[in-house]
Image 1 (cartoon, one colour):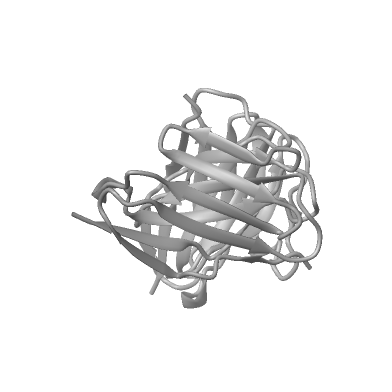
Image 2 (cartoon, chains in turn green, blue):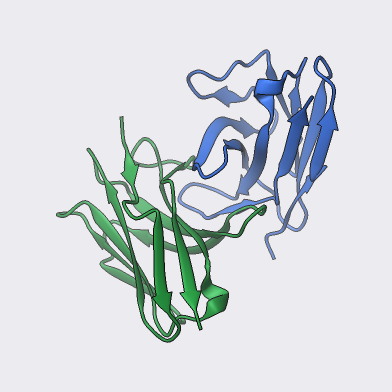
Length: 113
Length: 115
């Protein structure tokens, strides 16, 4: 079955630096990948969606890449701020396409001032 | 836009009680709603997919008689945990989607504690 791996459980960086989070998947390449942010005790909030025919997607200080050869997506936050501290989740459909999502375990980012 | 409201946010009850959790899409019609369970420091585990007017599709290992899902309208889905036991204690989160490959919009979750 498809698996999503976010290898780093935690990432600590200094304010102003670029945070890079990694999401690897096994087996098939999904039709799309999504990234979410989750704060403690809250539901996830959608950030970005990237499709298999897109190499890169940007939104303000956020950038996502999708490399089907490496079976990997990278999520970047430039000029990071303490307010960016949260858990970031990578998600994809369980059956290559469709509406349902399976999630990685997430990477908890801590940005210190 | 795309607000999903989930109630209650927290429930504490005795073993054997049935608990109903509501999930509403406030400003859009959701063709599909999802129910997840999340354990501390773990990722979201998809429990079931719910389409308006039809039976929910449960993931492998999820007891459909234990976790009853009703999707009565395009804006409301409910999850009832029947005869809850301490092992059912968890963080339950719902989400709503407007279609395939669209973002999911999540409620803020329900913290269920069974004594």
